[in-house]
Length: 236
Image (tube, rainbow, N blue to C red; front, side):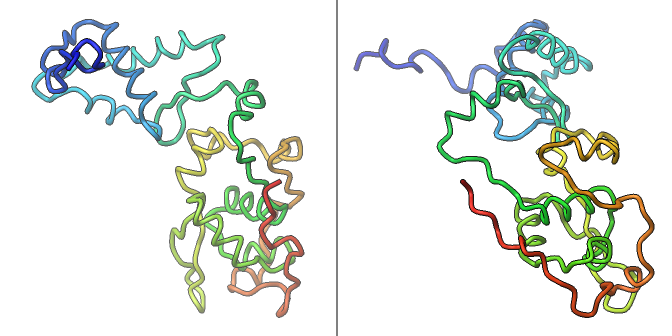
């Protein structure tokens, strides 16, 4: 066998953790960069520090310093290092996404107006029940919409309203924040700016008081109209 032809020839997969000179700040930066590029999801500081063995830990603050350097180094490049709710990740610069998206045959899924309005109400009024969403929108919420948002892990049940029937209370998740490039709910755009967003255009009184019947767990109409666009929209 020609060992020179093998990419792992002479490379001991168990050796690096013991051999690394972790006082080398540039090496720590390279390790953090490699981990963020290899990870399928964002990595938090705890996870990044856990990359280094307990018997040879890196100095406190070294990971944060590495992240700051990597973030600065990515300025003006095709990728950027961002912080979202779950941690840090590399992603394509937003202005370049239309070009990069051509690499993928599957087109991004489009969401119906009913879906986006339901998601917006959960995001801005959480915790909120399905009946309260229906009271604001004036139409019944399709079970498909709630199921789809749960399957995407954008919303979850966070409790139950203390009224007859104990309806489920919905709230958003870290996956929701990650998808919309947010670190926390505090970074949601102000309500006045929503109509300027291409992805989310609910024309709803999100900051208005809920109707009294909504607090009682009932919709405003005993047989409310169901959204015409409640069915999933096909991907173009």
